[in-house]
Amino acid sequence: MLKFCKLSLLVVLLGILSGCNLSGTITGLKGDIEISDGNETLTLSSATDFSFSKNYLPGKPYEVSIKSAPENYSCLIENNTGVFPTANVTDVTISCEIIAFHIPMDDPAGDMLYDKKRSIIYATDKKSSKLLFMDAFTGQKINTITFDTLMPESMAISDDGNELYVSLLTQEHNNQWSELQQEGFIAVIDRDTQELIDTLHVDIDPYDIVVNGNGNLIISSGSGQWTKISMYDSEWGGLLSEGFIRQRSRLTVHPFKDTVFAANSDVSPSAFEKFSIIGNDIQSLGKLPYHGTYPINGKVWVTPNGENVIVRGGDMFLSSDMTHVSQLSEVGISDLTFDITNNVMHVGRYDNSINTYNLLDYTLISSIILDDKIQRLFTLNDKIYVISPHQGFSHNVTIIDNPCLTQVGCGAN
Image (cartoon, rainbow, N blue to C red; front, top):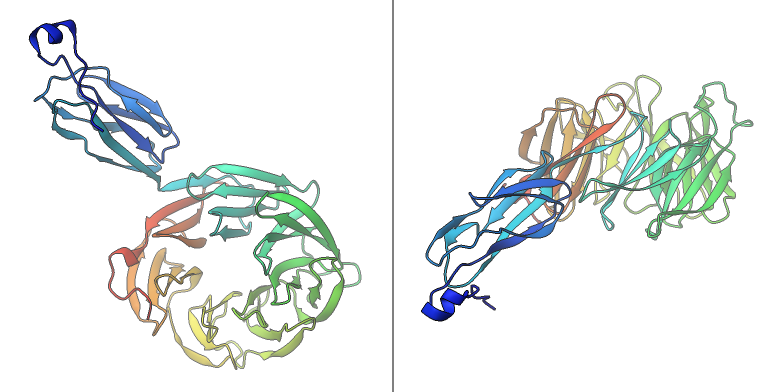
């Protein structure tokens, strides 16, 4: 409904309009912004409605502009120019979205996990014994859980998606810490309430965690050189099964949650091994049939269809028998994220580039060069979140447009 301009006494006598108001709305902003109509400058904080004090006569032009906005936001202004009719102008809109924020951490190697359903980034800070909850839309820290003297490190999501598991160390990983002496804990966090609901004691120095189809925890040890990979019940913490593994092996669970791949990270050349984790039992299914031929570099990812394993060195192998398929990238991979909606994967590389590949045939769709190193990647809607190390031990998050917004080759196949 149009709100007509106010009438003065002169208006009543002469039938002439005295003036119209200019107003609008700001959305999506956390911080100060300055806007102007050419006569008056308003300084506003956060998302709000605004109104300029000047009254305009019908037929007069108007223009609203943004004079300044936070550097970590991108703001789009619409309906900001025109000529006044005989009604107030109320539809000036300023839509802001965050394009960068900071994760305050004391540990440069902390684990990070993205909760797409809740739009939260979880980050472990081992040195300060804290788990941080960061809002991915606003960049604000919304919660912190402190574990006193225990040190949080790796994380995993429960099979039903309701709980977050966090490994808690009693001491730093140590080559000489024998299996009989090792111990640690697993914190159980309710993802909706963001509260600690349980702490499980485990007879292992927990390095990495994944969850199988039965909801059991699979944990690799971070100490003792040739050591254990163990399966624990996630409800009462009892040991169900165990096998042998190299210390500090990073775990990647198959999409079907019946096998796990373990890539050792403390010896060279690095390799990976495959384990069956069906039910309550863990069994080795064999090791990579190559020794030093391909750079593994201590980390693997499994494609969403479960057919291929991609290693940090840039090569791709069959998940079934671990035979080599092809070289995906000639440059090492720092992290990658699978974008199921667009049927692509975004691959962050050591040369600060992000390559986007079609998941149907792994053809290259686009390549973006960034200024900073890439530590982690996440996708949310039409954005890619790039996490990079910052000065000291903190991290910067830069948010860029998903190349699938403009590139041909994305989409379901």
